[in-house]
Length: 400
Image (cartoon, rainbow, N blue to C red; front, top):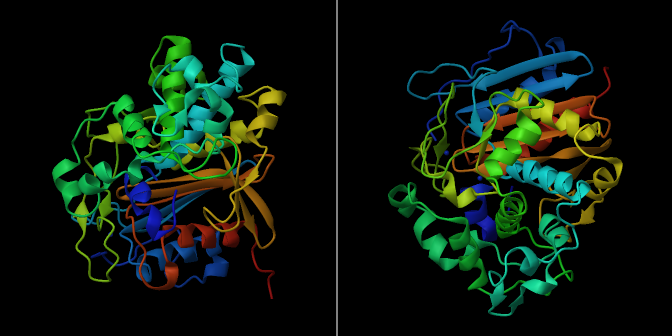
């Protein structure tokens, strides 16, 4: 989940295209109905503008408010067929993967199978060492809240040369191990001494995933499935397997400009890719419905004991280094709106950006996704679209 040009690769890989067809709505509103006359008309208006103004192929949103659920779309899931997005369509969720991983780590902490004050060196001896690093000084807690100072591997030259711009098309199926991701980060030296700053780094969650596997003797995918997706019946949510480029089950297409920001930049279908570079930090697949169910359970406190829940939602100022108006906890973020605060997480990967945020009690949530990784005009990025949706749904203008 990134916003600045300096972190473009983070966006492209595990965080962030255009010849979009005409905007189309998948909900039952009549064409002549005004935004105010449609259910969740404000959100629907933003979806329409995401296609007509920002130039995205398609946009969707699912709103859960108490016992009611609404789903709306604009544009298309597939530029070749023109079909509308559907609630069952799966997509890559990028950095929202971090929320699942943090939840697993905190469950293990509650079971005393690891400690948040444990060092990286304790679990992964010798891996984060040299080049200015001392793994014995970096804690699991610092990994989860991005205060470790560990370099973000996706900013490493050996990655930017392969995965930014058209080289991505040649390297999109490359297979990378978690150890290779961490080694690339370590080779570039730390951003700051542990605990003295804040910087978003996918390496933190690659390390966290490796620690989960070391502590349990099972794969990260197994732990996520047994602890979260199976109990919550999230049948469309899973950690993608390294080397498998497909999205299994129903899905639309994901489109990318390969980080080219020109208005007439070529658009590429990047639906199939090897997710291995997003291990632990951005490789999961889900739906808006499953994400709403997950975040409701998380916000309601059904996945973590009170102590660990308190740890997760202890938010840090991101010190101007991330998305404006945000704070960060352990795998979760808060976003300031004009009328208050919402909590959740967002993610971006090649061709798919998404957000899921809601009220602190989990009663009211919005989950949204666009199947392109750009936004034309004044939108800046798909985050501009998502922020407008959140404002429309949580802070609606009073009726005149």
